[in-house]
Length: 176
Image 1: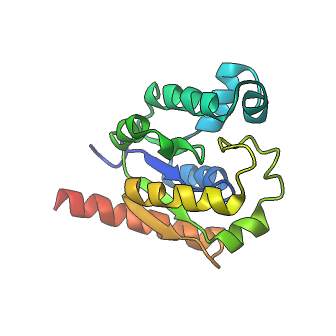
Image 2: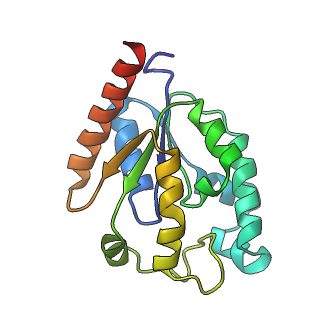
C-alpha cells in the first residue's frame, strides 16, 4: 500500500481535536476527510444526541459499529467518534486502511475544551461523568493505537506536524 492509498484513522476522547485536526491533515496530506459522527447523523437523519435521547447510548454504539464496519475509505483522514473503540470489529476493520492515531489529551485539558458534555451526543451511560468516561475509554484508545500523540500543551500546528512525522516514520519502518 502506497502512502497515497493509506488512510489515517483518528481516535480519542470528545474534545481531543479529531475533526479539526482531521481537516487540517486532509489538506496537508492531500487526502479526503470523513467524520464518522457525521456519517451516522446522515444515515439516521438525526443528531447523535437525538439518538441517545430516543434510543439509548447502546443503540448509538450499535449504529456506530455498523457504520464503521461498512466504511471503505482508502486515502482518507477518518475522524471517528470517541466511542468507536468499544467495537473491536470496527477497529480491526479500520486498521486495514492505515494506522490508528490516538490523540491523547489529559482529563484537565478535556474539561477546559468540553462545554457541552450533557448535550454532545456521547455514547455513555446515563449520569456517567467525564472522568468516568475518560478512565473507561483511555485503555481502549491505547489498545488500538498504532501511534499515540500527546496533545497536552501543544498548538494544533505542532500536533499536525507531529502526526505527519510519526505517520511517515511508521510507513518507513513498515517497508524497511
